[in-house]
Length: 124
Figure 1 (spheres, rainbow, N blue to C red):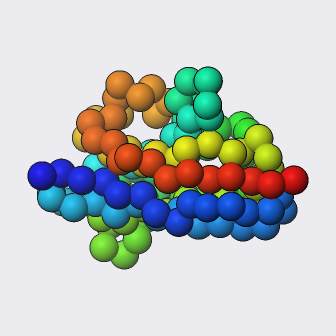
Figure 2: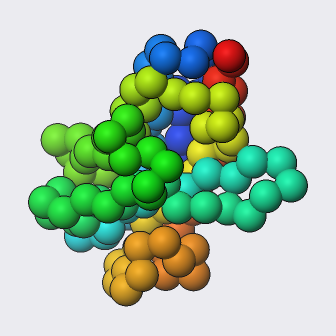
């Protein structure tokens, strides 16, 4: 059974830092592109960051560019989201996703597997 499991969420003060992790199991995701999305209450799920399977290309939403960093672990079945200088508007449930062929990195339908998410709350 394929699973993506996020961890590392919690309560953080604005201006602090937090690192989210996503561990994949059930199959190898070495050749899969990985993305992070988030969803706040009453809002649609939105794109946050993307990394290619090689780990050589990255994309970020304008709202997090320069503050968040996506990376892959040495085992390649793990992906991280380093959140620096978070803001209250970053409060949301964060999901990682894996896709074999991702044509549009911001499009949820392009991803094949999703985790259950981890809650991030940023206090002001």
